[in-house]
Image 1 (cartoon, rainbow, N blue to C red):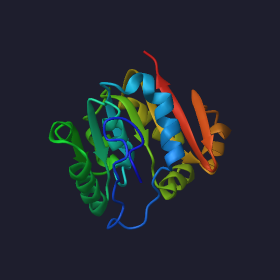
Image 2: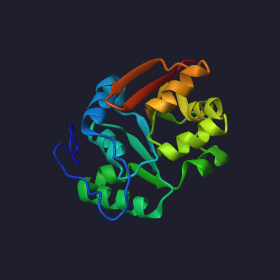
Image 3: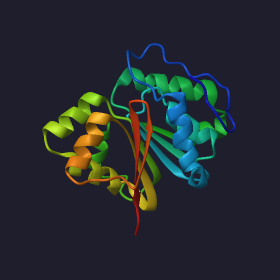
Image 4: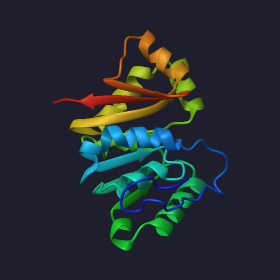
Amino acid sequence: MRVIAGKYKGRVLSVKGAGIFRPSLGRVKEALFSVLSPIIEDSVFGDFFSGSGNIGIEAISRGAKTVVFSESDRKRRRLIEKNLKKILEEEDLERTIILGGVKNLIKQNIFEDYFDILFYDPPYDLLKKVIEGKEIEIFIRNALTFIKKDGVFVLEAPLFFVKELKSIGIAPDKEKRYGKVHLLFFYKSG
């Protein structure tokens, strides 16, 4: 996995030592940042369910002002720290924050109206639980509370979640599909 553009283009991220996870594919990452390119510079960016830190590091490379990584798994948080130290220069490292899982952040509500861009790449098992618990609206609404006016929430999701979302009448403002992966964009207008 490499940083694909910006200041740190070509630098390689580590993915070893944090168990098995599903990093965003290069073409998905490229498409995501193609859509976000007009607003990434000087943004406050959230990379939730961060895994290796792949998306947040790309955001820093492309000029995000601050990046908050949220990951519940300790091994993955250590992997993010390792990748940040390996790739970023000191002044960029100081603009990053690593926190625990998203559930605690929602409960604490410390990030209300905080992010210009918030990216979620949750485990598919979590999305299945959200569907089973009939909590899709709450899931989307909670994410949108973190977004500033005129910001965007982006959800990377599989087809089964997209179908369920649409079946209850929730449509993203923009949708991009790459193989089995969908990027769903929800804009918060004021």
